[in-house]
Image (cartoon, rainbow, N blue to C red; front, side, top):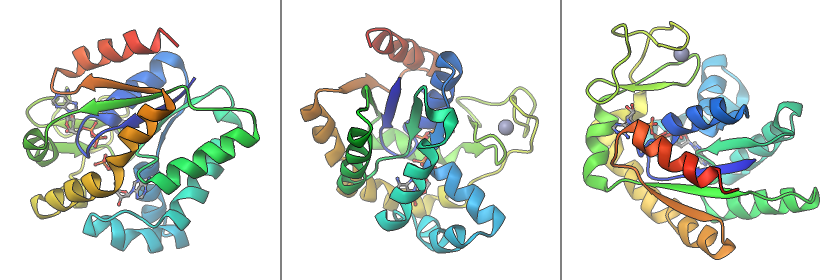
Length: 215
Ligand code: ADP
Ligand code: ADP
Ligand code: ZN
């Protein structure tokens, strides 16, 4: 099963991708997490990506596409994966399609989690993230069991530097300009499914499971 998660920053892609990955025993591939671990590790890629991420802009396709294609050619991705945060531009989607076609493969579903912009600012403002395993929490909507600690791995939670109020509106603008066109792209491919992301995380997950069970 090869799945793409679509939706605005803060829509709940990561929250749901982690659940899908656990349920279907496939890797959760988050380009944001891969960039953040490169930044932390001080790699060349991390140095190049950092400024874009801090400003809320997209990292250029030249850096992002190769990184993602490398990741999904690893042995653990042979049985499928859930992509979270990729593709974010039409050229990224085209490159992915081409690379898969060469191996006689394709994406099964593109799941669009729909949340109006008016909800997003509150979601990103209260987001706390685990720097180790990538899980996210929310101070109000999804608090961890022990304050400040990740339920899954016990690490100390952080506020992401790009979740500042000043950056959030810019990221939403980037989403509408550069990523939103992917909705029509995957609709035309016949694999788009839309889900109401304003429901609780459990309700959203049930809706996703129902769609996935049809594949
Ligand atoms: P969110 O969960 O809020 O949508 P992510 O963790 O997916 O954010 O991404 C954080 C940042 O990493 C993005 O704002 C962008 O700068 C960069 N990034 C992640 N994925 C991509 C991508 N596919 N193309 C370009 N930049 C990306
Ligand atoms: P994305 O990966 O799309 O940027 P996240 O999964 O990180 O989004 O979720 C953004 C924030 O909203 C997090 O703080 C998360 O705990 C919270 N959240 C996720 N899903 C829901 C939901 N259905 N209702 C309320 N808050 C949610
Ligand atoms: Zn964790």
